Amino acid sequence: MTSNKKSGRRLRVTKNEPKQPNQPDDDLLFYLNQLRSEECYCGRTKKYGFALCYGCWTQLDGETAKHLNRQICRGFEEAFDRAIKELERIGRI
Ligand SMILES: [Zn+2]
Image 1 (cartoon, rainbow, N blue to C red):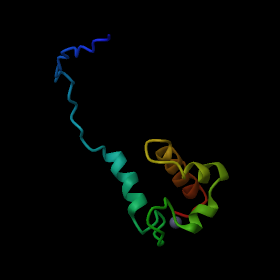
Image 2: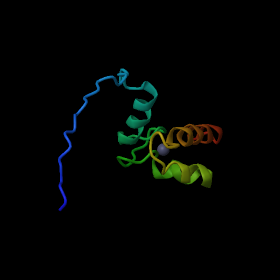
Image 3: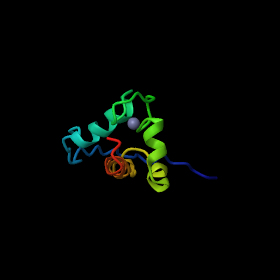
């Protein structure tokens, strides 16, 4: 015979997690707004959710454009900065 004794399990609620203030990052907001905006950095209209308008996009270095498909916090910021620099260099913005 097997006896299945239920072991009394004590739940220990630990509320010791260090709470960090989750303050919105200004930089992050900037990039988010760029994506949400329907105006490109160059002033032309663009599609919501895209980093830049099609015209700017085609001017970019292939590698930069590819990285712009990344998500925020996963490389998008760097790619966007690079894109802006490239567009400035060619005098588009
Ligand atoms: Zn543009």
